[in-house]
Length: 326
Ligand code: AMP
Image (cartoon, rainbow, N blue to C red; front, side, top):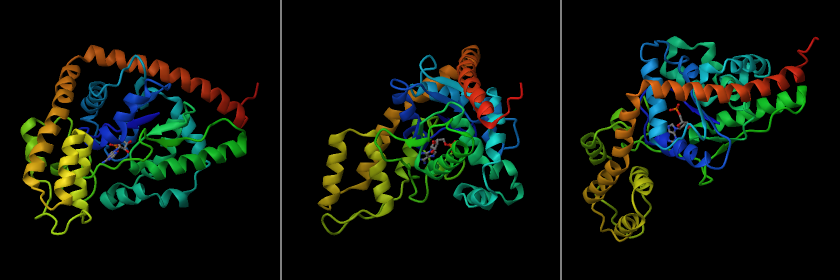
């Protein structure tokens, strides 16, 4: 189970941190993937763009290879029972631990005018989203590690207090390590809202991709053989490893280690490989976005599967808590 907020255009971080794993997991697991529209309300109270953004996230997921026939692809707000589970879990979550959450502190810093209770209890709703399907594996990027740890705490508290209903959820990545896709300027990560000129979006046109890649931060190159790479150079290599073929990566690694690297050449290659990777996803997305009838069918079908799974869990939950009076 996993989700993406409909707060803007999806980027390479979303793809390599999350969606790539979604697509592989759908072949082996019973998967639930949602557009986290309720979560987006914590930071984006203006809903004028919501419908467009929800359609975009659905389309981009499908364009990346997610198959709505194999996995349940649905909107968070279409599964009403999650809100009920969220309420029960709120009694098991403590103010102190919620206030210490790194993402909460970041969001307070970014937007001190709108420190709402939904923002504080974001990890609780996220836990409800996951465990409503009694999910065990949660494909997410590295930024979600702490939220998953909190989810396990809430689950263990619930199971301890009311009996074993939920398995412990764990963050999941096929390559075993969770990923953080860095931004092109070497500071921070790719993101829907920050670092936009240093983030590669799945909707970016070929020329925009080339321009962004060519502006990635580099330097004059190493002066000693086999020297460690500064962070921003490591970032460019990380991106190359995501989209380029092995001989290309080996060539530039060797050039770096022997002090023969020409970053202009490396960035040109990276830009072309990026264009080759992103262009087909962008074109497919635009095609799907225009088919509103299809998107509606996807949402309905996804909601049906997700609601079935949620209803089964909630029966167990109400029983376990003791809300069964007749
Ligand atoms: P969000 O865009 O915050 O709704 O996140 C959706 C998914 O993408 C989550 O699983 C995040 O962990 C993942 N994600 C977002 N940004 C990055 C990034 N720069 N690197 C890796 N994963 C990311």
